[in-house]
Structures are given as structure tokens and as C-alpha cells.
Length: 236
Image (cartoon, rainbow, N blue to C red):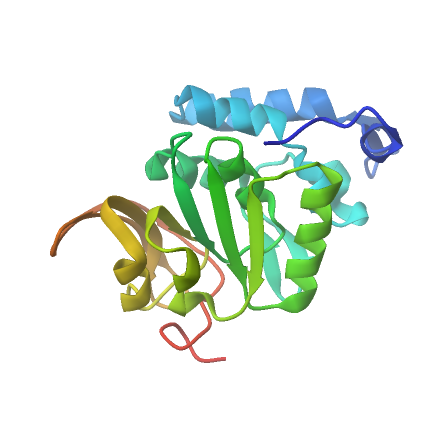
């Protein structure tokens, strides 16, 4: 779980200057984000809202973008990847319905922000990132924030992470052409998988619940994620 730091690492980032030169109070910005972007759009799960109020999103973006960390849009994080819009992070988390007994597999660590949101509720989060620079940066932030229930693996997320399977929950944070078979195999009976599926430009969020050999699939909304690259995803 996230433990707010009392030392300089966290305190020195409590505020920043926006492009007009005015100080940004990150605590106030985070609360505004929750009320105006999440609650007003129908995010009501208490544990999701608590996580979004707790995790310092600004520490997961580059310093030049920190004054915009709580705004209603994605931001670049390098390597042609993005940190998702806060509402999409909250929605995907709510759809996944993580409990404190859940073991979660996340495909696409990216900045690590979604990972941290999951870790606020889950027993353990295993996250896979194909890009070493992003994985190492996210790992550094997790250590900085004293998370003890996150493990990071660098590799092809489309084949999952079989070592720790089965998982009660699986979340994919990139757009896939199909649902990778490996992820379904590694999903526990009764488990839930949330994944954006579609073409390279637009996807629909699917919520798949596994019942033995049967899959119950529902859909949520249209979205646009970066491509899921790998053996069972899009080619580079």
C-alpha cells in the first residue's frame, strides 16, 4: 500500500508552477480531480475514489508536466506512451472490482500510476512492461512511495506472467486486436479480465468473467489506448 512520505522526497513536490506562474497545490488539485472528473461522471466505488484521492499522480509524470497531472486528459511519459486520463484509470479500476484478497496481473505498466491505484486495494499486483526505461522508472517511484505489494517484470505482456498465475484479476492498459489466449489461461476460475479491444485507433473496453470453460463478456465504452505490442498483440 502507498505510505505518504514525511521526508523531502514527497514534500518537495507538493506544489509546482503552472504556465501562468501560479503555484499548484497538488492535494487540492487531486481532490478537484476526484469530484469534478470522477464522481460527476458516475464513479462511485468508495475504494476507487479513496485510491484516486491518495496516489500522487504528479510523481508519475515528467516534471515538465506536473502542473497538468490532475487535468482531464492523458499526458506523454516518453517512448511514445502515455499516462491515461484520470477518468479512464478510475473506470477501468472500478470495472475490475479488486478486493483486498485479489492477486492482479497488469499488462502495460507504463508510468506506474494505474499500478499504484490497483495496489491500494489488491493483495498483490504483478505488472509487465515491455519497455525497460518505463519499467525501471515506475519501479523507482514505487520504491519512493514505499509500495511493498508490487512486482515489475520486463517482457512481452501479451503472454502474461505465468509464474504467478492464476490471477483473480487481469487488467490490460493497451489496445489489443484480440484477447490474448495466454491471459485467459492465466485468469483464475471466477476471475475477471478488463481489456480494450478493437483496431489501432479505437477500442471498446471488454469485461470478461471466466466460469470454467465459459467466458461471460460485457462491454463498457469506446476508448483510445496505445497499441498492445507483442506476440499476441499488434506488431511493432
